[in-house]
Image 1 (cartoon, rainbow, N blue to C red):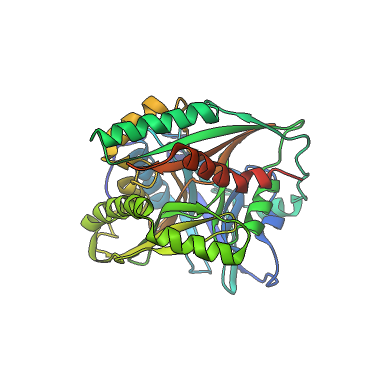
Image 2: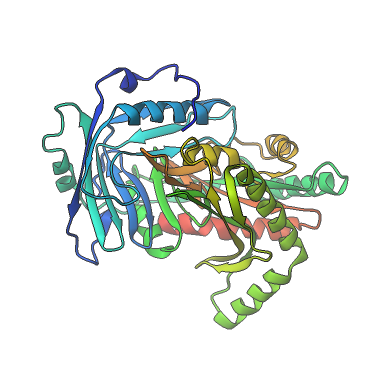
Length: 427
């Protein structure tokens, strides 16, 4: 990994090196990793039942500001270089792993990079347990998993508008369209929030179970209070290969298969959605190109079918020529914010977002995922997501706005994108 600034504060870096032990496990084929997850600082990254869950905190860093990615990468490089690792498993996600969530904007909330004390992983037929502690502290760490309990259902959940109500947000969309047609920019992604309040504190493991079951092909995640089921993979770096799944252009499903096929065909021909998608793919390809010796960028998108919506999707792939010096987190930083969550041109879109949205996105639409000691990892975009704080959950949804966007249609699109987390909070 490349060099970077030294973190201002890092108790873990100054302390004893981390001791990491990974052993193979025999798990039943139908075993759910979420069922084994305790309530103690849970972290999650799952897709189709495979992935990682963890608990406890062996080390953490909370960077902020424009240098948050470089600070986190430098801290992780130091932690990894000093760690004592013994692993019987050689799969992505085994050994020393950190989970991260990063603020969307430079002037937003703190980001977080967390090393759990216990991690369970599964990839295909291979499962493993990793324990992490300072020297001499490994005894009985895996017993935390015996404390896993079934999470209770949320009680008395109600929903209210966030920063802007529907009419106010549509007015913001209308103003964005006016700016685009005036030539100020080509595309901007505008988001809105929704606030859920329960009668009692919500155990995040409940909505995680619901999301993983209802949206198995998405990446179900939870890190440091932000959770969701994102369909968009910002970047995966694995053994010299890099991939990114770009989503832009959306239509809501009706539940009628024949009708949905007709809508999918309409989405694939929609000039508005194809324009929005082209901006997003171009921004990803341009960000990855300096790091790749070869790239594959499909000429046309495919339609990704999810339970609630359909998206135009493109999988960009490449061979990384600087994997020894550039980590997956650095690649994520180079890609963020893509046109899929910011707009085009980037800086003009970010400025308009700050002007029109009327809220701080926090970590919504920022990178979220994990990275191992080699710098390999998976980073998604924190979409279909929410931030949980006791009995309050703040949900987010956004839409790409281009020259011919219709405010009513964009509002309906956000309502469709709220569905996964809204449903996950029900009992």
